[in-house]
Length: 512
Ligand code: AHR
View 1 (cartoon, rainbow, N blue to C red):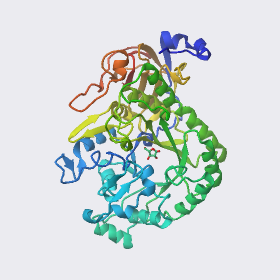
View 2: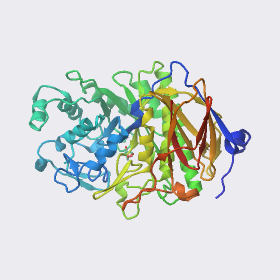
View 3: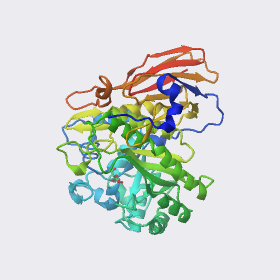
């Protein structure tokens, strides 16, 4: 496989490709926005083993658990500081009837999860189990409501059940073990309503949105943030029609973008360098897709009253051999870590309109943080990137400037030769990624005025060299080959930190 350099970019390459890259870090820039912590959000669907085996094993399980939630997962998720969690779907949400998931376990009906492998769903994880999980971990819940096959009344009553202090539904909630209402801020009015959520046109959905949203009430001081089901990828018409038709009673419009080639998803662990660069190119295309949706939103909403929420994103590969094709269980390599790092660097710079993003999904599905098998747990390279990057949550954005050259993969997708983002809280944090499979990269970070006195760092890199390193992943049986290590390959001199990034590495520096 040959890597081609587009002539368009050949002239620009020079320093960034073959020598040192100079990155100006403007730590003194004034009036910079805050990076909303919610862009580090997650998604958990009743799909495969995300909920059952992943989050929930039940109180009587031999697997160590905290009130039914597996303990290893609770500990790992706590470390990530997950700000918001979307549930119960996805496509599942539009077939979910919340009353099936409350009350005594023995009385909860069973349903067929027709979106995801026809698995029997016994509803043992329902509203209480989800909201208590969020409460225990300090996570903001994001409820995805059923518009496709549920009624306006059903959604309205769900909101009342969760958030009202008095009335018959509050009494029922108390009878089921919860007296005080929960705080629920985010409510999604349908999911992928153009597809599995009802195959609607944007015009029809706009009217449906208004009906359903009207009856989602604010009870007893709980204030809802209502999210309209948004476009997929490049469907700019959906965004346009929604923005034109829905002007009130809406706080956010969603968008879904997966790093996938639907014609040939490919293996999560066996791939060539060209596959790797194609995937990175597809991942960073999210920047342009976000910008295009934002531009449409700007036309109809110049005052930014409505946020953009990327409430599903991540890599989508073939399922692991021998697993249920409907369960979307895939391994996770340094390639996924690189996708996560490049994408989060992009989100860190889209603070004006992009206010939330939810990676798909938290455990055992698609680009998961965590994989489980029986009592074993694996933290994926993606998990480590999210842990390393959580320093950017709610920090003030720090602009960085450098000539960001791009290379083209054989399929013509452009990927950057370097990715950087920075923020300021109690310290300055700079995240840097070198996507190259073969070449190290030397980066000079030059600050406006700061002469760093104390610098430390962490690095995530695969094992071995070249593609072996990129394909590195953690696996069951204690095969833990990718985990962050202390990073020391930098030198400080005056206002400059000179950093050497090995091939296919992700580094986060803490600078005082
Ligand atoms: O995350 C898996 C599925 O992808 C979700 O259920 C759906 O919304 C999307 O198509």
